[in-house]
Length: 112
Image 1 (cartoon, rainbow, N blue to C red):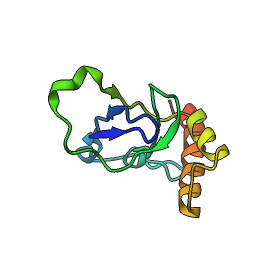
Image 2: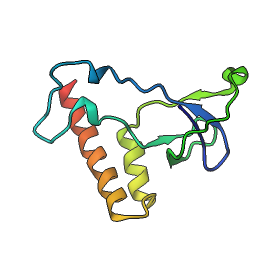
Image 3: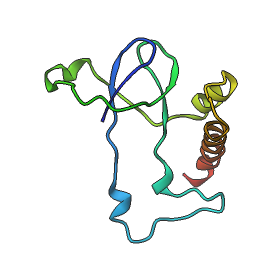
Image 4: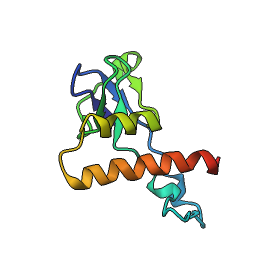
């Protein structure tokens, strides 16, 4: 899927691993985290360095400019913390999502 930065219009792509669907037993941890709930909805732009919500994927990207596209990496504790501290959320449910992802990111360090 392709996404565009809200600030600098940098095009980025994200490979979504759906292999967890094939697994017969997906672990569910005591904090309610499972591998099926690990898709992040925020990312940091590699070009302008801001954290932003991943919006609608861009359908009209040509395959010719693959070299100019940046991969989207998994969000880090620092990105979730920055999103909360800069009030990146507009609704209570977005704030809860960011706080839950921050909590899970902290706990992921013990799971690895």
